[in-house]
Length: 150
Picture 1 (cartoon, rainbow, N blue to C red):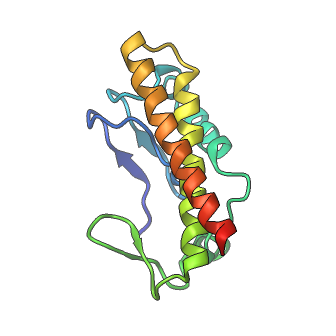
Picture 2: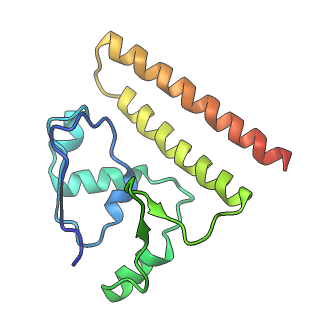
């Protein structure tokens, strides 16, 4: 069985991870009544999926298990999922891979926050969102400095 419907309506969600658009059998992503800009969700499922695909980092490389599903319809070995809902790693990543992974995640978050700032927000929400963006950019800078130090 593959995931076809995701319903996270009314859950105070502010962003949707762009990787969700890679689910090959996804037919319905219900995200209404959250803090997501209305113009993103009002265009229907296909517009939302296109929006999310455009938010994937340019250097994003699909994991082998995603390619396997796309090619055969069945995963060669499905990823293990931890109790937090994150894909669990088979073996610990080396420090460089961890930094790269963290950097890619931060870049995706920054893009999502920047997209949120492009919508009409109240002054208070805009201020809070700008602060959040500053924090994420600082995190990105720290990771980049750590990568250069190696």
